[in-house]
Length: 408
Image 1 (spheres, rainbow, N blue to C red):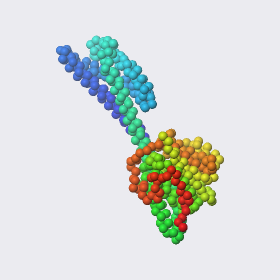
Image 2: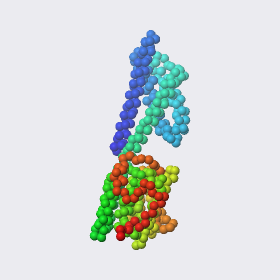
Image 3: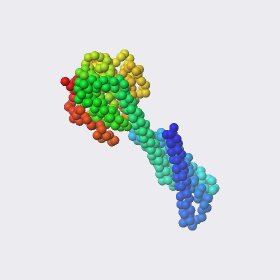
Image 4: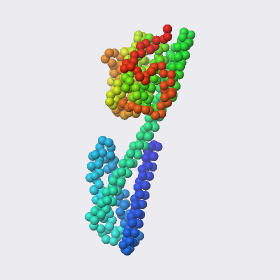
């Protein structure tokens, strides 16, 4: 409602400024006519000069809304500017002749002109006037359109930041879930007597995970290597719970480490894989995290070797919209939120799919635009502190076997 009210005020202000400009041009034309007649030794009444100036410029107040509609139908966008240019080139003489007709019709009013003017003379003598005026109005409409798009992007960016902050806070709540805290604190309490150093290290890891989550609230994208650093904190915490049962394989090529990814996008997916692929069985389990970059896309995959998807769950996940949720017992609760977030950040070019892997288990695949470069607003000191794994220059494939193993 606030945006609509702002748009209404902006629209009224724009049209008010337009009529003020038309009135100013009419007054300038009045002064020009008075001095022109005076320099030739001819007399012209003030009323006739004022009405003649209004007859010259006020017809554009009638034509301007029509030009605005034409500009909305045929905007100068990147993919259609040539066809729009052709339309406006054709429309220029049409609107010019329309203005000439209205100015010629006004000349039949005795208070405007002493005698009716010739239509051909009006059109020919004012060619530069109506040509420049038409393209000035088109340029003004284009500038207003670009300004509206700029404001809409600002509003969208503001809303996106708010949604991201809310999502990160919700993720923090999930990490502080009593079940998660119970397992973590239970493992710490067990290690306090057996291995105090390991217990201290786990407390530090939990602190790092929570601190990094809070420190990056409001940041939309981070380099992939920083996303992996955050993920490493989470995987380190899981080692006490699963011990030798958990094996993680990272296949992250070096040329993907500077790619920009949504902040904290992998942790809920990996948590989902651990919950349904490792926690659901008694034996050892495998989690594979891979990245692959093409010219325009970055593909991230997270695969587990658990029991796979239940019947119909994959079809239900593929068919649902961004705001829908699968049943609580399914895998798609966090994945649906991630899919909605990807659509907010990148639009339809990004995808998230859930499927059974041919070799067993389930695989989640994220595809998003490949973006590289520095990211402003990222607090490097808080994101890279106390890193346990050097991810800045990894080998083509890094395998972390038995991440959960404790010290002997």
